[in-house]
Length: 51
Image (cartoon, rainbow, N blue to C red; front, side, top):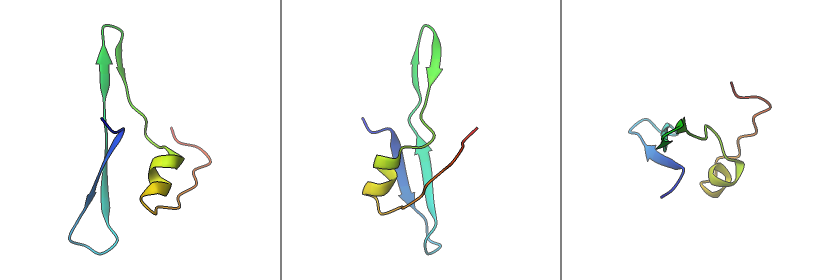
């Protein structure tokens, strides 16, 4: 399963990005950004910080 679901919306250039949430007995984990995944879709986004 991928870490993100990219959904192109009717507004040109607008993409909804849904992260996959992984859960276990300790709680949950999700990535909010992956350079590799975004770059593969042609989204040349470079974050300095994500909180």
